Structures are given as structure tokens and as C-alpha cells.
Length: 304
Image 1 (tube, one colour):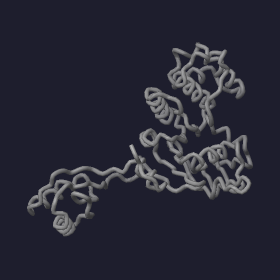
Image 2 (cartoon, rainbow, N blue to C red; image 1 turned 180 degrees about the vertical axis):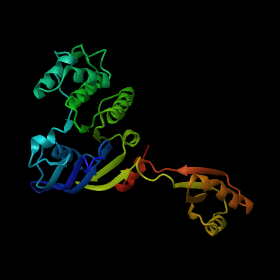
Image 3 (cartoon, rainbow, N blue to C red; image 1 turned 90 degrees about the horizontal axis):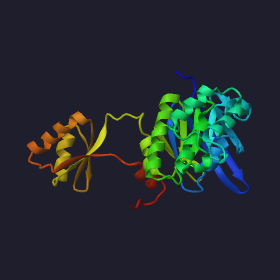
């Protein structure tokens, strides 16, 4: 087991003139995690990403990558990072394979076998010998990811990677990201506006507003033994009193009550109600979506 987080941000602050872009950002990302970075335009997402990869220097704070301080030993720290900060750029008159070879030659220690493995990983085997000028946007994104992971980084950073992709392209992208995390054990930071895609992909989501982290929401590593369940019924006060006497945590809600309990406790709660003359019309699990959390935090209303 790793002794330290893969990425650790300590009190990162960035000011440009009179504008405070980032304020005291603290964040830890573990090995093999997929992390979403969400925020409005101008919230500081891109500046934070550029700070992590060394394109922007913070006025205060530390960026620690795989145990190495980015400021004091840039080359050693940045070797663990692959990134697509903007749309990937290639020599369009060269083939996909030639572009990857060109990039691999900059490192000098990337084998042909590694190049072939990466091509297969991003599913470009059938198109790798075609000129990049003939590639669709989705294929270029896949080639960009291939290029970014050639040197086997421990951290992959993707800034708005699904911009311009159609639904099929987004679905393919999601599949590649999951495969990368599993097969390469790479941690991935994804900055995106697509809340539902982030929710499906990520272990945790970091919401940033006005240069500050306002929430870190966990998805896959939190305790899921307890859940909130809504019971649709009419006699709310009587139901709350009965359930409370039987040890349940209960809240009144429109058209019913909400309980926090384990799955195996649901039949017992139903029996308490029915045996005391309270009809239960439906029982539904409540799971707050990332969209709900995002708009609640930003003080806005979600509209379809």
C-alpha cells in the first residue's frame, strides 16, 4: 500500500493583479482514483489544473506529486503526470502511429511494445496507420489520451475532454477512462461541465467556486449500508410517532415520511405501519444526484 497520496495540494493560492484566482486550496487524491473537478466558468478550475502541471506558479502553497514537491524538483515530480489541458494537437499529415513515435522519441525510453499496448488500450488499432487529418474528434481525443499515457504516468489530467463529442463518443470515452484506471492503476482528474458523466465515472467530485473548494463529494468509498427511504402515506404524524417509538430515525416529508435505515430494516418498518392501520402506498430509495448537490451549493435552481 502506498505511504502517501499521489497528489497533495497544500494551501494553494494564486493572485493575478487585484484578482484572487485561487484561495487556500487543500486537496488529496489517492492512487488509482478518478476525481471530477466541477465549477462554473471562471471558478478557478483551469488555473488549478495549470498549477498542478506547472504551467502556472502559485503565489503560495505546495504541489506534491507522488511525494515530490513540484517547485523544488519539477522534473522528478512532473514525470508522473500526463495531461490534456486543451484540445490535443497533432501533425495532421502524419499517421496516428507516427505521431506517437514522435512523442515517444522525446522521452527516449519508450519501447515499441509500449506504443502498441497503448494503441490497443485506446482502441485505435484499426486506424493507427491512417493520417490524423482523417480522424474524427473522438479518435483525436483517444490519440491524445494515448500520447498522454505513453510514459506510464501515475496521474492523468483531462480538461474538458468530452467537448464536441457526440453521445457515442462520450460513452466510449467513459469506457476508456475506466479501463485506464483499472489496467494502468492511474489516477485521473477530469474537469468537465457534464455532471451526469462525472457522477457515473468518479470516486469523488471536487466542487470549486470563486477559487475555493466548497465541497468534496465521495461516491464509491463511502459507507452505503445506511440509506434514506421515502414511505408514501397519509397519516404522517402518527407514522412518525410509531416509527420513532420503534427505534427508527424519521422525518416528515411531502406525502409521507423519510427514514434512514438499512435495506433489511425496510420490511420491519412497513410492518409497524401496516399493523397499526397506516396504509403504505409506495417505498422509494432517495439518492441525491450530483446535479442536485451542485446547484444547491452554488445557490441556483436546477432546470431541465
